[in-house]
Length: 490
Image (cartoon, rainbow, N blue to C red; front, side):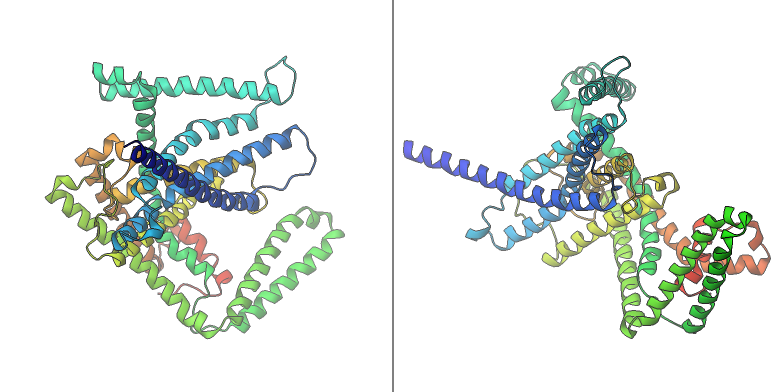
């Protein structure tokens, strides 16, 4: 009996060590990738080891950790779906015994814990530490800045505590809910994270439809479009003439003080013309299959992915109206390895691709909105404050991605850990309204995207094109037709 107990304890010990090693290796890979991304966009500073350099380095480490946690949140559902299908296909395989229910639950709990830590502690600390200078009258240095940062964090915590307390009193004013707020770890932090998740879900609802329509424009700028009834040689020749004219004006600016004052504008215009010439030369050198085959295939893939997403959301709405048990409630006792999909592995692959597609679209849509364009990172010229805002926004979007995917019916995999404890997930009206808004807004964005050329031609025919009734995005894209080497046609 004692030997059996020792054997069981040894097995539990080895399984725990194995889970820790797997989690550490996964996070190490994510941390290295995140460090490469932040290093690529961070503004290059001098090698001088001063106080500001140390503060920037600490803030960079915290941002890298946060971005790695965001990557883990994005990979949660795909990893869980893949693991479930593998365990369903190979339940007795010796080499995949490390891929078990305990590991998947542990990953969900760790991502939830680190998301709370980054969102409420590390990122506010990085921002306040970066902006701190020490209290007036105190000796300047790292210690003074750390002290000021902790004081600001304490005051921020009191402010958030008061806001959540007032919100809880307004929404659910009873003795049980008010007493539960005293339980900081078991109720208060999950309740606060639930509010943040709801905000993240609303942000995804605002960004994802915009991103789904914007993806066609982005891929059109990255790929070489088919050449139809165009003379690229003539366009390149005209661009070269404009470049030579600007170059002559810049050469004469040294002797003319008035022209010298506007030389900066001329340099920007010259850079734009050179970019246009480079794009036209790239189109000219592109192979036939790249111009005539790759672009239509990519556009068809994007259209198919968007159509499948909207169709799944519509089916989920019908499913919710028929059966209220389809609400995205969490599960802490799910037996990993149970069948979740009707079409097996193929459906799981489609779900994973759609989850990644929605995440990329949400990021594209986020930076397409005017209010968030200042957070767009620039290669080798992004300040640490902007990087902190970038990491926080990506963390909020990625943390809400599993919840949005389950709420929209993209996947039937139940939310595990604290992700399934959000109160609003059990509200029928919130979930149905969320699905309806996503389907309607996505459809309207796509219709608006593909009918922009028709609207412009109608406005020109009616003589209303000078009233600026078209959107600014369409105008800016149409103003850059020379850069892409083609014009819009009806």
